[in-house]
Image (cartoon, rainbow, N blue to C red; front, side, top):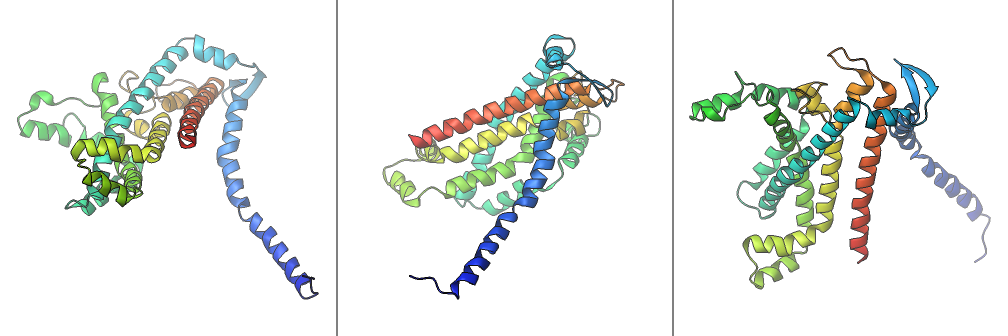
Length: 313
């Protein structure tokens, strides 16, 4: 069809409108670049230089990484914090996600009180993680904390502990508090996964006689592969980025005796010093940040590659 003179200005107007639409993401990209891309690039750069306080010194190539992995106390503290991150991840993966799935399944089956569970377990997520940390620090206080008082009241005095003051119980206590904080969020993700399963498939499985735990393991879980992988990846990210809760409950030293030290806390203490009088080493601290970036990026990439491979099959 031949283009009329009336159509030409309209096409020019639409073209300029399309160009304007393409400018809409620019503010978001600028904010992302400033607060995500630039800090990553800066950490890479800082890790390659010597530092005297906040003054950049000479270029030392991978000297800070060599210091991190070969010199005391950096190498010992890195291994210690890394092992704690793995424990933190394992506790969250098992405790947090199993409880989140049970609650999601209860809501999905519309058991009595389901809506109450949905609201009650998501409420902690609305609180600041710093407030959660200080609140649980009071609850776990060995002398006047609610938990020990309750155990004494019901005759379980032998179970009382200085939960955050003993190396054996401090890290599990902090990890379980983080589970309590995160259960509601992961419950919603898993509930969305349950609701995406075709009702016809579930009804067919019931007609075939599938019931109870076997029904969940052989029918429900295989059809929730993608939500479960997403939950696993997000749990991993949450565990290896954990900082605020430990800092609020146990300080920058990961007390007691570094028993709650995580990589993010170790990075903070190494880069900026601690309240024990340690001076920071920004170069080695940046090296810790870069190593954390590669750990998180590598494991997340492997997870996503696994998901893509399963979807392709």
